[in-house]
Image 1 (tube, rainbow over the protein chains, first blue to last red):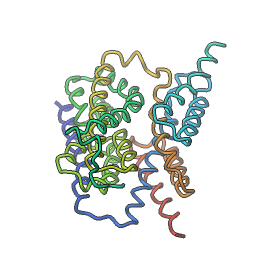
Image 2 (cartoon, rainbow over the protein chains, first blue to last red):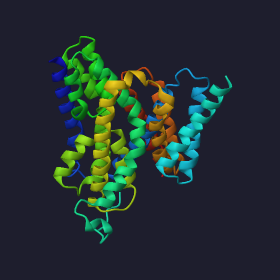
Image 3 (cartoon, each protein chain N blue to C red):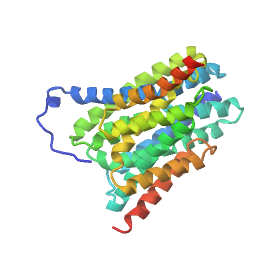
Image 4 (cartoon, rainbow over the protein chains, first blue to last red):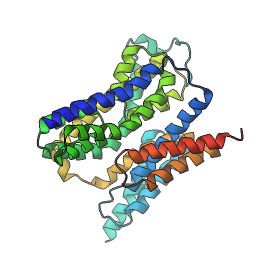
Length: 108
Length: 239
């Protein structure tokens, strides 16, 4: 029963959190300064998600896993800079991670 | 955000805006790979929970892996429902910021869409909406794009979490798939790094989230957003 109450409570609270700004946004005209701040918030959130994802990467104890993960992100950034699609960016990034990992696993 | 008059595009031939729906599905597909590890972990946690049916029923209302996991952990530790609810809402606090960021661009959207969109709003759908809003298109096209992406995520997430209930505990740390999520985010961050002030915002937010490692789930991200906004605002003063 506790789980049911918790699920319903979080679901409702989270939904209200997401819905209210979308409804209020119709009536509120943000100033240019607030618009820019919101733009910074988006970029900051995305950057934090990248760094947080790298930080908590589960290398499974493989040697150099963090280094290869950094290499994967660098490869992805390079392809993104050149205007590559998201699919291409993810595939190239994962390949940049898997290739050295598999090579080292094969050698050892 | 650029909203233009409804063009006589191919999109208009289909009442459900097929082209934009498909584009939303395609935009979400790589992100599904990114959230797969979290879905499998959540599925395994649901299977091990004392009330798996209740835990599984939370997939749609909560619609977020970290908050869902947090709630289950708090309940498993014997804490009361209020603490579990507070934990889940705290973890989802960032979604309020996401919602605020989308609100100006969705002023012209009908009310029903905003009610539905709120239920689908989470990191990947927000990222897709942000990306779509940077390109020209009518309110209708943006709406169809978001719904295509959101429904794809909802269906994919439900299937993957359910699969995780069966096999999740056997697949932990599978060949670096958890990297797919940050790789998707790289695809969204890099095109936004146009000015040095953008780079400073990104660097400051990244540094903040590293420093906040070990803080309660979700609070590090909130700090990073706050630091990024502050650094961005400081960078604007000379102009």
